Image (tube, helix red, strand yellow):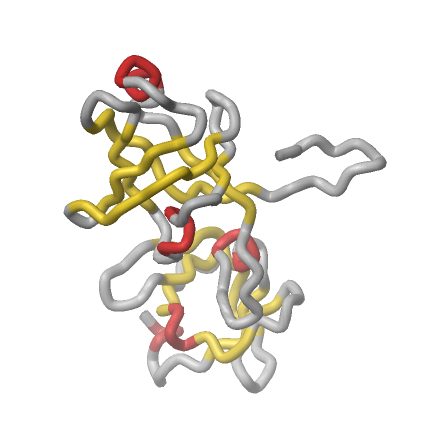
Length: 165
C-alpha cells in the first residue's frame, strides 16, 4: 500500500481503524480492538498497513467486543508478541452514504439559509451523537447534518438556540 506522493501515483489516505492489543494463545493469534463501526474490517482478506508492514486477515472471530485475529504474516506467539500495540490503518471504504471524519475536517458549515457558522476543526466522539467541533467554538451534533455533497461544505439544520450556546 503506497502513501507516497510521486507524480505517477495518487496518494492514498489511510485511516486508523484499530489496534492490536496482545497475543492470544500460542499460534500467532492476536486480540484486535477496532476503532471503527465497520466490522467488515475484520473479515478474512482485509489488509492493514502497519509500521511492521502489511498484515492480511486469515481468520477472525468476535471475542468480548473485540476480535481474535489470525494474520497471514503472524504464525507464532513470538511474532504476535512483537505486534502488541501496533496501530492498524487501512484505506477508506467506498460508501456514498457515509460521512467520513477525514472528509469533514476543514469543511465550511452552513445553515439551510446559507449562513456560514464556521469550519470543522475536528469530530469529537459523544455517546448520543458525535460532535462537529467548529473553529467558532460551536459543537454541532452530527445528526443535524443534512448533507455533505462531496464538496468542502456541510449543511446543518440544528434546533433553535444552538448557535447561542
